[in-house]
Image (tube, rainbow, N blue to C red; front, top):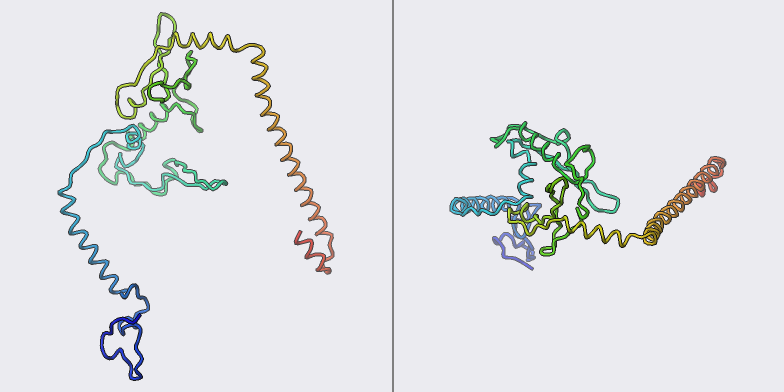
Length: 281
């Protein structure tokens, strides 16, 4: 499609019409009828217009406050910016054999960059590290590299198993002393931890554990124990068979590779036809 011409000079004497104006023919890069210099001018004007229009809107905008969540509080306590530090490279992404990506949090010694006291912080760096130490000690989930954590031993039979009948969340366990016995209490407090809301419900676990104990005594008989042990041994036997088949496949591949290597080493180098076939193997 022929565009408008800038001047009569764009029409040669032979009567042929040029497909681009003369100003575009002089530039190697043309995007939608604009040269590189014109694109830079448009970008600068757009940035200036956005800055002029955005600054008044930013000053006249409203600040929205929301409820503090447990995850946001933990993120704030774990981030070095809270102590006035500037950092980069706190995590490392590794690609797994199945194609997924695994994010690994690195210690501060392995960060790419760390500048302490880069800006005014709410706490010092020593207080930040002390907070991290307390958080690590209070973690209840098992993790590698930690030999001590919050004790979780207790007589409760349903710890980690009880679910709330109202909201469906998992219930945690508390203990209170009744005479000389420790009696568990099952508490649904996820919303209380996450959003500082009242707990959903709390159930005294003394009678509940007693009922669970009686049910276990009735159900767990020699016959059921034998069935349970047989079911447990079946996956173990299958795993052993799978390991045996894998070992046989590895030994077979090793024997084939050793045989091919010996055949190749004994081959006459002058006989290239045989040597090429052995190299292909």
